[in-house]
Length: 301
Image (cartoon, rainbow, N blue to C red; front, side, top):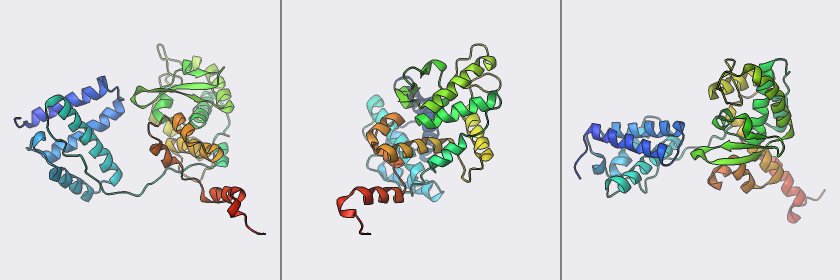
């Protein structure tokens, strides 16, 4: 195979990104992440053609990026993007080898998002509903926590995705996969209150469930901002970010049920190993269960 000039390498990347969007149905956000990671590969490889890169070249790139401060987690994501790109080149452009296969990256400590306690969650939701925005915010946060949604999933919802009879929400997750998740009674009540207000704010042609002040679909950044405002108003001592609500949902569900598979389905995880990240339950809670239930753990009083 002939060496590819820089512009030809760019064409290959563009073709792969189109493949991700049109055939694998990945989201625009995921495609943007892949584009960023592959741009780094092209920058590092410089004049070397893609089909001439070998394992030692990829290893050198990883070491260089790690030395510049990239974490093991970021490097693992980047390497995964490069590996997938080469699988595409092998399948569609006659490449013989994948130089990323078998490559490892430095490990980083797992920094899990903070999970609110049940009491903190109740406190977060206890702000006064005095106008349209506060009614909307309550509905957003209640649904967010009640169903363990991703931030983008929340903002993509439409009113018809909520089934008040069944008490469920239809969610479009990663890879455009749809799942149906239960919705709690507090969230359903908050949503009913919001839908009464929504019509007065709705811009012509808009279909989103949650709206901005202009009546258009609310942005993920705006949801994050509103959450920060509500957390501050309720005097929560920790920084409360959107993913913390999803993490709190998972942690509280696991503490109550212990059913990892059910939580995996509700979160929309393809692999249960991803769900296991959410299982850093409070050790004292686990120790208490162990002491109360295990025959050999009964302590003499």
